[in-house]
Image 1 (cartoon, rainbow, N blue to C red):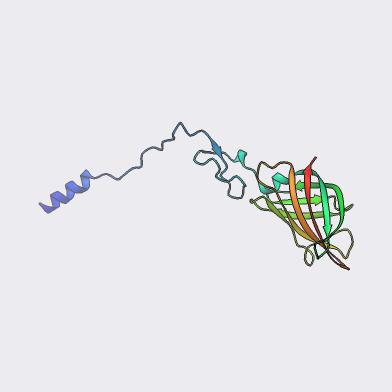
Image 2: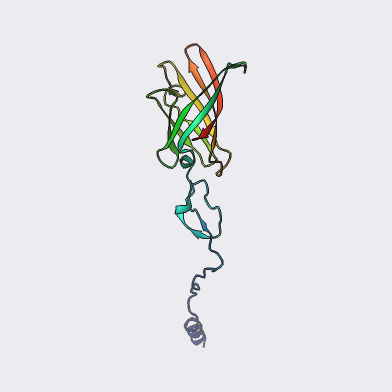
Amino acid sequence: MKAILSLLFFVSCKPYQDPQPFTDPRIVNKYCNIPSAINYNWNFPGIPEDSVCVFPAQIYNGTYFYRDSIFNNAGLLLDQDSFLLTFTQLDTTHLNITGFCAGNTISATASRYFKFNIDTVVGYGQLLCQPTDTIYGRGSKLDLYDTLHIKMSYEVATDTGIIYHAGTATKQ
């Protein structure tokens, strides 16, 4: 009798199968599904579409008119200057900055939080216009929709001391 009941139990049971997936037709918005993108998972839930992704270095790409203020270590304004800077996207997070001085390219790394840092390759920064000068610093944008401005602050270490710079770059 036990054998018959056991046999009936195993014969009457069938394995569970997942139901067919259901996509809600009301969900039509697209979202970026790449974690390194600035807009990762914005508009979720939705349809994953990586063509809507915006990457950190991408938001800086272009030529900017930079207004520079130069300070000493006591915070006193020493001088003001302006020049054109060109930001060139190399990949999703790396970019080159040219325009500080002729023939000089500064490399930087951007994060998905609207900030970039000038990479350190020599000592405390990168060589600048003179062989004894190094630059190190950072820049940022307000948000993804700030397409016109970059705030920058950086320091230049020279053979006579450190000079502090701060300013705003406006896209041309």
